[in-house]
Length: 487
Ligand SMILES: C[S@@+](CC[C@H](N)C(=O)[O-])C[C@H]1O[C@@H](n2cnc3c(N)ncnc32)[C@H](O)[C@@H]1O
Image 1 (tube, rainbow, N blue to C red):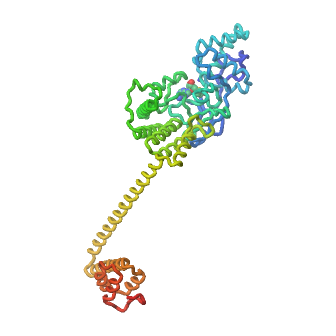
Image 2 (image 1 turned 45 degrees about the horizontal axis):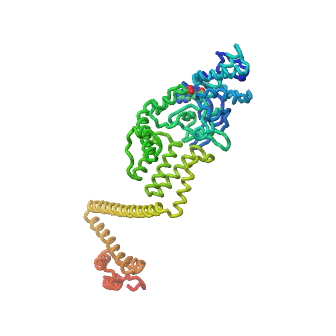
Image 3 (image 1 turned 120 degrees about the horizontal axis):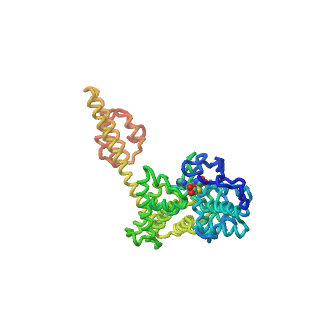
């Protein structure tokens, strides 16, 4: 770690800083949610001091200093902008800045020359000039190593942040940053649940689905080789495959959507229909989820599912995906900031279309109604088949049980079963004839087994009430006719 702690440093009072200035940054609490800890191989990093749920805003802080977007990384004037931005800071404000990590090679010879020229213009000479050049070069190096682009595409310039600038990089970050243009603060939101003791990581580069060697190349600016799980270790191979496919799908969509990309020299198989497009977007969602890239890239993938769902005439599906896009977007960047093409605006549009009876929603509703009807019928049939199977099994078990009984008992059991069946026949017949069940019950209660069987035999197939009554009249009686029932 080549960071410096310059408690006594003031920009224009450089004599206290020497080549051997001792690094003295201790572990300390920043907020109750995380703390700064020294890591093996990455310098300092932010670590959760408790479990943090997905969607939590863990940082909202203003920049310590900023420079305008017009000042590029290699602009010699950059050093002057940095020095001038640091000028008004008090000692207390300067301390968090000077304690930050830096890579001295991030200041090239043009910047060094610009710093020297500037200091000479401020009347520095001899040893004082040498020392001042060293301090100011360090200040510029801190800025170049730790600065964060603010706003969409860095349009609002670059800034240094006390906490955010301490976050290390991962190719599968667990927080997403967003600049709040209303408060002028940078915000960090967790994109997934974070365990206590887990490192809080951001991404330093765009397009994390690029091949690992391209990612490493882009990270060279920060002078480290990424060793996260997507880059090294047992999971890296699967990650490479998934990210390659994610990149391929993005290339296809870039071409479909007419965006400039490298597609013309890398052939891609184009989707032939809206249905194929939505399938591709759904594959993208699945891959990103598996890969743990669950922040804004996932929100955009859901958005594509929604867009192509609508194109495929699947309005309701499109609406569902739009809701997922809003949920992921708001988890990743909160609800305060609205991107120009935010997922919520798209959802509102779809909701309006659905409400106004757009044909894509109407037709789909009908399709879904028919589909759920079909499923319901299938389930009913299956339930009936199941019940029949159970009944057959029961009967077979009962038969086996009876067959295993001694002769006398078996005859009794056979009779009992037959009578039960006979009662069912009588009851069903009565029902078909429209006779009150209570009357039939009363009558059945007074009949013996043989009588019930004789009765059942007679009634089998009888449906009309008159025939039923006639059959009852012809039944052998044992004096238990139902009172007042007409039997
Ligand atoms: C913005 S600073 C991050 C905080 C820094 N680690 C510190 O000690 O203050 C960027 C520097 O952190 C280190 N770093 C960040 N992410 C890293 C990673 N994944 N592996 C190794 N070093 C990393 C690199 O030295 C990089 O130049």
